[in-house]
Length: 287
Image (tube, rainbow, N blue to C red; front, top):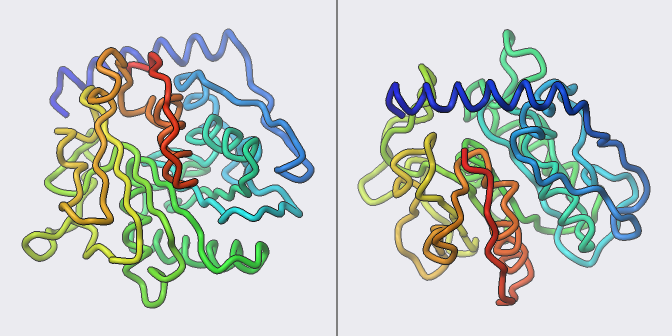
C-alpha cells in the first residue's frame, strides 16, 4: 500500500474512531446453546473494528465459544487478521453462523510481548501452533472429526500454515480466506506480511491439500492486501477464487469490510453447506 493509500486509510479510521466513541459500545455478551439462541448481528464494520480492539483478548463475539453448543454441522473456527482481536473481526459472521445452527469458535492468537490485547502480531508459525492447540480443544468438546476454518487477512495465512503441521490437514474440511495474500508481498505500514517464497508454483503458505476445499474471497477495492490478485490460489479442482465485484459490481467493500459484507457472508454459508443458493448483492463497508 503506497503512502497516499495509507493516508486515506488513516483519515477514514480517524473518522470511525470519533463516530464509535460518540455512538458508545455494543453489547457482545451471549450465553446458552448456539442453536437455540438468536445472537445480535453487527453490520457496521468500522464501529465493530474500532470498538472490538478495545475489548479483552478473551472476549468472544456473539454466538462464539458458547458452552454446551451441539450441532450436526461441522464446528467453524474463525481466525482474525493482523492487529485485531477475535471480537473486532467477527461480530457479523460469528452470530450469523450461530443463528443458522453452527457451533462457532474463535480466539485471539499471535499476541506479542508488547501488543497487549491485540493479536496477529507475532510469528505466524507460532500462531499456527497456537491454533493447533485450540483446534484440539474444539474437536474434543464437539466430538467432531473435522472443522471448517475461516481466516480473515493474516488469518487465512495462519490457517494454511496450520494445515502444514503434521496430521492437521486431515482435521480440516473447508478452508476459507477473506482478503488473503497468498503470493507476492503485502505490507501494512512497516509490517511485512510475508515469509520467504515457497517452491515455484506454490502459494506462500505451503502446498495445498487435495482433501481440503479452498475458497478465497477478494475485493478489487482492497487497500491492504494489494494487489488483490495476490489472494488467488493456484488453480486446482478443489480451489475457488472469487472476486466480490465479479458478482456484485457495485459493491464498494474494502479489506476491513469483507468479514462484515452480507454477500460475502452468504457465499461463505453456501460453501460450508454445499448449497448454491442465490446471494443478494449489498453495499459493503468501503475500506
